[in-house]
Length: 161
Image (cartoon, rainbow, N blue to C red; front, side, top):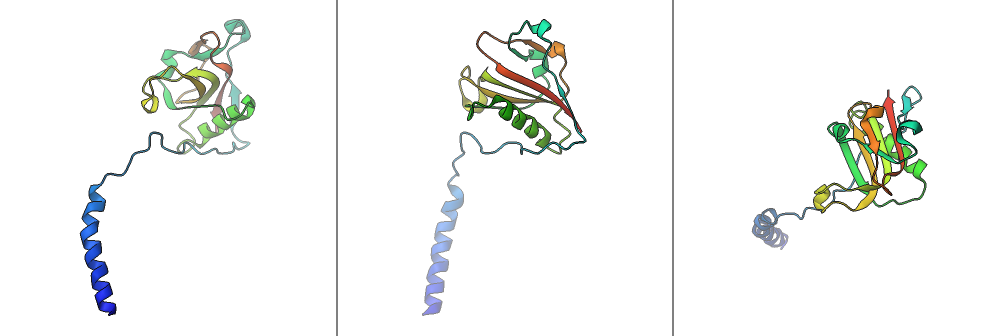
């Protein structure tokens, strides 16, 4: 009896197995996860890269198209909290957690940033919170005034460990 059950189970498995590998697995529209949020050790140097207020005349600021040539990673999402300082710090900690911690040199975070066309298949243009990583430390000339009502509460920090 046990042999008959074993044999029927094996035959059923052998007949179903080819179909399971032939059916493609669904691909999620947005893959979960991102760089880990890694606490920044005390031996790291963090520098506020916010452009001087005289340069920007108290306007919001965004990275220039030239700076975007050095874009390492980008995430756009609805803001889950109103605590901009906390969220921008989390973006910086994710910058530190990217790869082995040495690739990301600048983290930029702002609310109401225009999502690029094609970001995870989106048409683009919708305003969301952005966390952007760059492969180099951005300078004053790497920022430009943001469109009116966009790039609010912007933070830009470099990290060197």
